Every structure is written in C-alpha cells, then in structure tokens.
Length: 226
Image 1: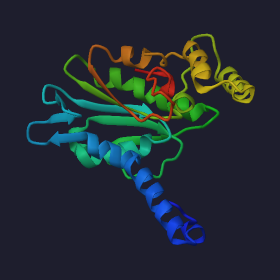
Image 2: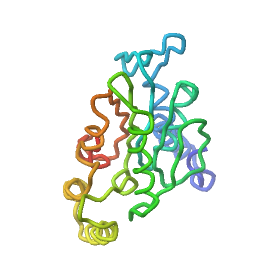
Image 3: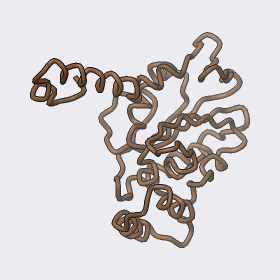
C-alpha cells in the first residue's frame, strides 16, 4: 500500500476509485519500476539495452556512480538487472543507506544542506578513476535524481564546504526556484555542470536520470553533473 492513510480516506466508493487511480499513477513512476521498464541486460553477451539503444559492455569494465534521493533505489533496481559480479565497483550518495546492494556502495549524505559525508562520497567516486585506471573501453553508469545537488557536494577550488552550506541556506530561504539555485551551484562545484562526466572522459558515460524538475531540463536536475 502506497498511501499509508488509505483506510481513513476511502470512506466512499468514489474515494476508493480515486485512491486506486492515484496509487496506480505513483506505482508507474517509482524508481524501481522505471529502471526495470527502461533497461534490459543480455547477461551472456554483456549488452545493455536502454530504451532501444544498445551498449556493448563486453569490451571493458562497468562502474556505477551518482547521487540523489532516489539513487539508492535506482542502485537496487540496477543490480536486479545487471548482476553485481558484472559491476567492477560502484558508489552513490543518497539521503538514506538502508538498501540491499551487492557491489554498489550507498553513502549516506546530507540533504537539503550538504555535509562532509557527501564530499567524502564524491571523493570515493572520483578515486575510482585512478584506482582502476579507468579508460576508453570502460563504461560508467551515472544514477542521477532530484536532490543530487545537495547530496553530491564538491566545492570548487578556494571555496569551503561551510560556504556552500551557508549559500544553500540563504538561497533556499530566498524563494529562488530550482533552476536559479542550480545555475549558481554549478559555478561553486568541481563536478556539477558537466564536470563529472568530463572527469571520466573518454570512457562511455550513461546517465540514468529521474526528473522532478518541471520541464525535465537535464542541466538542472542535480545541477547536470554529466
């Protein structure tokens, strides 16, 4: 049951039907269902198909990075499609850590105010490049969802995390919309605004993005790290 107080709301037949419709809509957009409906993995040939686009993963290794409020569920869903043994390593930053993943590490980080745990998680993601000598034949799947801007902090040179925290508090209280807030965030970060994708170049970057931004502007969701 998705709606926790359904029993007290469903006082008439019409209300029950309305709640059925609402729950059906929510069910379709749950992170787990979206990922499972969009991806197919050929285990034998190591070919990943996403919405009719095929990616041959057999030439190199597979890594998973990312962050957002849904990234833990996305990681769980991904491992239900791609066996953990086919993933070399993975790290995502999430608001919670109660997820059952075999290879993808879920790091608990601060939201909506970023914290040192989030910075540590990003550092772990970036360290994969050196640790595994990631190259052209390797593939990076980046799991991105709303909340990723706060959950994946990595201040630009000369800026302290405390500055980012104060800035976030001020902007959240200012009434600025998410597009305006994230436009500024990109200039205060070493991974936002496409810089995370650039860091792992020339490996193949596949971004799986769940949007909660009206209009689905990919440069706004989690401040567009890839």
